[in-house]
Length: 84
Image (cartoon, rainbow, N blue to C red):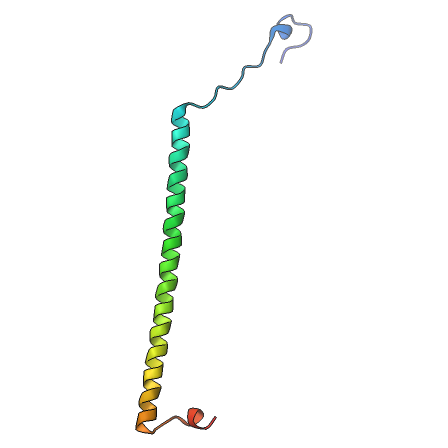
C-alpha cells in the first residue's frame, strides 16, 4: 500500500477484523437448526413414500394370492401354473 520511502509506511498496522457480533452467532445457529429440521422432514417424507410403496406391494401380493386360491378352489387352475 505504501512505498518504503514514505514515513507512514513504518507506522502502518493492518486493522484486525472484528469478531462477528453475538447476533450473528445466533443467526448461524438458527439456520443450522432449520437446515437439520428440513433434512429430517425430507427423510421422513422419503421413508413414508417407501412405506407406502411397500404397503401397496404387500397388498398386491395378498390380492394375487387370494385370486390364485380362488382359482385353486374352483378347480380352474391356469395351465402354466398347473403344469410347469
